[in-house]
Image 1 (cartoon, rainbow over the protein chains, first blue to last red):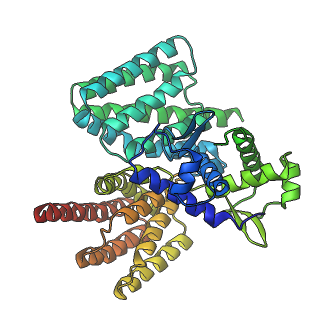
Image 2 (tube, helix red, strand yellow; image 1 turned 30 degrees about the vertical axis):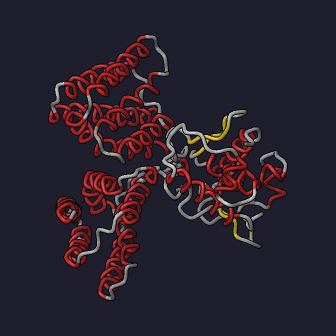
Image 3 (cartoon, chains in turn red, orange; image 1 turned 45 degrees about the vertical axis):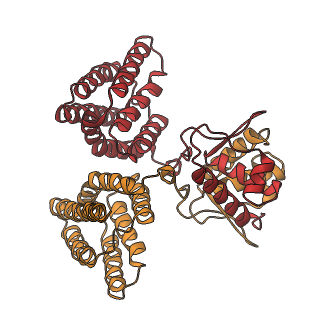
Length: 234
Length: 234
């Protein structure tokens, strides 16, 4: 298959990336039109188009029809950035992802209790309430909000590398394994999220770390109990 | 810019991914030729070509000229999967990445001491020796080997999500910050890697965790001392 044009397109992708960075463009900003951008990065328009497509597939750019090309939300985070879709044993993958959550998120909660702004804490409380409402309405969409909750706690930590990472791990878990099935876990989610919220709000890092650890350990244990039950059935 | 063809190309990319997974293709395996693959995923050849290009830019496929299309090494891991190149303060990013190493790698070492195969331990010892040789020869390429060392320890842990993650974090650190400059840190690298190696070899998880923690904490402290020295100079 066509491999010849590859390196020119890659170079052009890099030039566009440099353009974004040197011009301080950020999430949601619009790029110049095709004609001007081709001039800026000094290539023909068909090469430019291919480079833009490559950046779209890496979720760095998005094309809004009739409007133009923009820097994506969640810039640069591709669908499956860590290649998890190539792991065949998704139950083992889920357990291993819980191990990573177990290692990262308690400290993240402690940092959040220390570093969060008051606005972030307010925003977190809104998300917490939405989760409770959706669980009350038996809506599966509470899982999305649950991922948002943990992502925001990670942002509140102040660690710039953490929020993308925690978000990706939680999204992967939700994609590969439905561990939210039992009502017991739904109740636990409500109680734990309240405790995490309260600990962060009262600026208590030790308590925040403890309650986040309990939350994750409880979910992890429920996963391993489900596994045992399924093995028994076989 | 052209947005119309996007969803068909994305669908085709997904069909190719499904083809790879259902046919149990793995790293280095060859895909059918263009004609046959287009038939398999039921699209025209020009759409197929674009989908292949998109997968090449995501590092899922690679095109070897005159030979064909293959599943990439490090399947699915793109260059900057977590979007770190969009963080402007690279010193802060490096500190934050060290925080993640600090949280993950001690436990990884403990798991490695428990789960590693004898072959992996032999391989790790080879890498350790190569690092020492390269440091002795003042070669900058020891950094690459250093990343390999930590990646292999992560593989030895048996956590399927860990080795990609640890590898990406270490690569990012080496890209954004040269923390290997001082001779003191080079000596420390040699001593620490020997200690980590010995602890894993003697199947001692507690010791492995301890020596890995010392290794990372020492590097992190050196980073923060460099920062203080640079601030004083300003």
